[in-house]
Image (cartoon, rainbow, N blue to C red; front, top):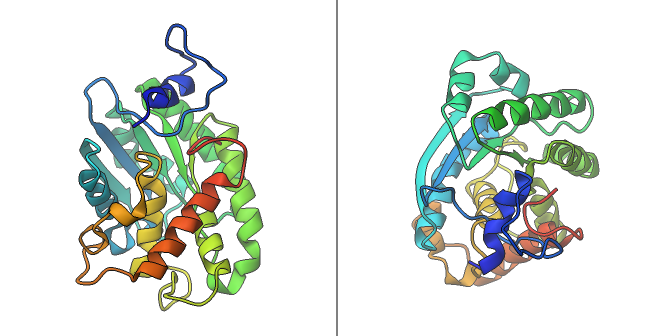
Length: 256
């Protein structure tokens, strides 16, 4: 990781190392004082499908990123408001500090937007009390409502930006990959939940905030928990989709 990577979490807390050039935006995340990343996922089936958090752990381990405790509190059809009212979720949130608390709900293109904004704020405020930081995990609309992608992207970016949260634009990476033409599908059979490749693209989008390594250096079959890896052209498209999702704005990786 680059020397200035440590600025990422410090900047989020309003801190800067002495003499640091604050004009240089951070590229990747560094772990906390214990030297490992402790991560909490709060979401629903879009998070836990195909054991996506486990894919992320494998990616971190392959690239030598120190992964510690990774907890997943994800339940079917749950939104952030449901989790806020759930005592177990609140206890886990308080059981910090977590380097990142990934929060995820449905696409929130229209009717879910107020809830996304309000409960991102509540979770972010609560996380700060335990020394944790929120990361907004952007998801995707159903295949039948692909026209909602711009609103999904805008609403998640706003939720992150208003709350000094990290942004993990998996939904935008999905949009970029799909715009690249035919190929293995990201959507599962129901046209909403992810296929294994869709979950893997989500994990890759998260991983790229922890390590700037090339996708060509990864054992993709092992990371996916699959017998076979995607072919080289699909890997190229996955890399291009993630790069485009993070490079589509002036801010650097993970920042709103």
